[in-house]
Length: 203
Image (cartoon, rainbow, N blue to C red; front, side):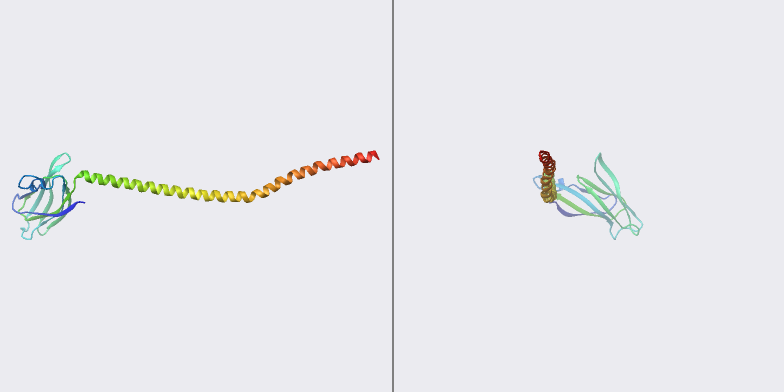
């Protein structure tokens, strides 16, 4: 679980500069990094002018940080007392150092955000893998339960059909038994008539 700390700096005076570089600031007297094995991220949420800023003076805030293809240096805020005294930002900087510079104006410009301190990235990846495995297991359980319910429903339907067929079977058996009797009766009748005719001839 990442820890979150308030981050705030003030730039005052022409070309004022502040650098966020926890890898160097967190080193103790022996030169060892106190947060070795931890990942830090800087998130900037707001930039605003102080009440003592000069009216009509334009203040330009610039940031320099590492981008995907190398270092990037770009303005992120234009502030002027009476017009734009503050601006909401949502900037994330995962890699130090990050340099804030007041390239125009004298400020003061306050920069506010928070610093995230988390465990090593490998631990985050392990947690993500565990969560993915749990989600897969849950999906498999849901599929198995759904399949079981489906088979149970089909079994009940088949049972009903079999019961109906069983109810119809006695009638079919009776019909089958009656058919040979009818055939025997038909065969017996001509034989009986033939015997009667023979008797009449003898007389």
